[in-house]
Amino acid sequence: MAKGFTLIELIIALAVMGLLFGIAIPIYESFTEKAEQSQAVADLGNLQMSIAYFWAANLGLPDTLAQVNPDTTTDPWGNEYLYLRIEGNPAATKGKVRKDKNLTPINTDYDLYSFGPDGQSVLALTAKKSRDDIVRAGNGSFTGIAENY
Image (cartoon, rainbow, N blue to C red; front, side):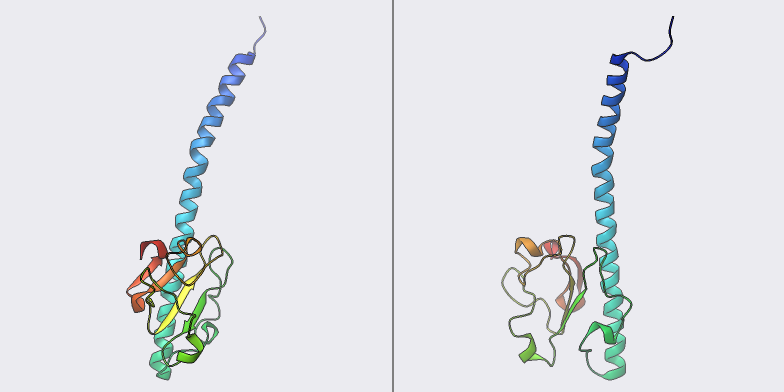
């Protein structure tokens, strides 16, 4: 009698493997997405701290992120972190500040955010392109996914 697998046994084994991969891959992707979001939130926290140190030393906000931390310039998705100084710079920020669902600016001092995984954004946080952005809001009282603000 020959030893080996029958065609039915191979098909069942492949079906089980396919089922396991079908379950494992979405779980892995969800895990990596959460890890990237957490990294972006941590980066924004570090940038906020660097901006606070800059403000304490210079009694004013920086004009660019390069003035405070040139090493942390890109988010986990390879996009640049965006910074817009609002305080003391009203002409340059007109029509460029991030806004909440009531179209009220989410910050009065500066905007700091990432475009998120899709690499796209618009000013209103409620817009589809902005929901996955990682933002600093409430003048630093919130840092996280725009959809949660």
